[in-house]
Image (cartoon, chains in turn red, orange):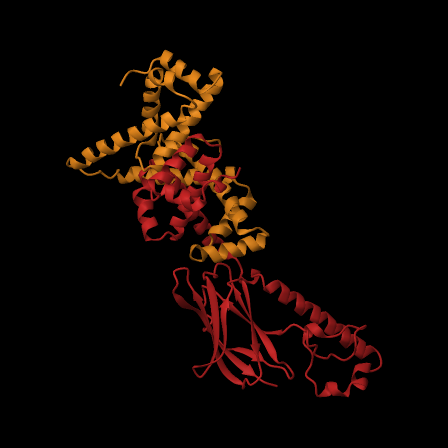
Length: 283
Length: 200
């Protein structure tokens, strides 16, 4: 039998904090003295409680009860001491590793590099075919390609594909810019990020990559501003390492825009996480 | 209180189990559980109070047992509650007396204690956890401000549910705590006996 079926973790936590009603406390006392698994369940709840205390996640009454009641027992103080030691060591170690870790190890670098390499290979192949044989059919058969924009590198057709690259309605939205949220550098620093829109594109994607340790929020939201006026808004985004914002491009004029990323903290406050200047260029 | 004699203790053990060995194990288990209960009640000396409870139960067992049905646990718990009440009363009396104030330990002693802790931690990290386990803990604690969101992301990366990740890191911490307690000479009951040499 799972002990959590007898007493929920919340009751065990209140028991440890001395906040449980007498009757319920007596029931847990009795289980603790006699039942298999009860001691382990209480110790599990204790570990969670200590972690929450160190995370600063206890509410005011729990925090007070933790310090006055729970920490009255020397063994509990030692457990807290152990947990704190481990945590501090890990944080020191993490800071040391971060200092020496090159930024290029971020998760999004790999796929981008792979796409670029494949694109380069295909371009080389096309160039070799063009320079060694007769002119490729693509130019003869599709005069429209002279006016159409070049396809994205990743969608250049291979030898067996159709020579004409037409936008497919089901095709994924192109990533037009990748922005980085980093604790070391505010996004607003440096040059604006150029976002080139292509003809026929109805939407592009702006990717926001959080470097390690930057996702600190319950929910995220973003706003695209032009001269202080909101032109597009993304609400209630789930925090994750790579955030994808689909931006409808219809009606967007070329020029400078500001993208503001905000986050709601566990305490309920909403803060600005980062902001970037985007320079939109239309075909 | 009456003195606990060998005979009284042996008679009490027969109440706990059919064989001396089984009863002995049960007695130790009961003591361990009582220590935890006293700690959860917010008592400062759980081990002493558990000892006091069981001593009292042993000395009273001959009187209580004849008319008693079932396991002695309910009786033990009743005695533990009385012991706690007495302890509260004596603490209240102690609080009403003038308190000379706790004297801080000498700085040199504190520094040595901190060094011993760090040394034990290094040893325990190397002995109790594999490299992968240490790395998982490192990721888990990397960003305290980002705790919940970051941990969700780690669970996702590791292909684990949030609960599994929490349980796994909990096991690692418990292993580390056991090792640290051994190394620092801390008992589970909260007593300290100084740093113990664990094989390096």
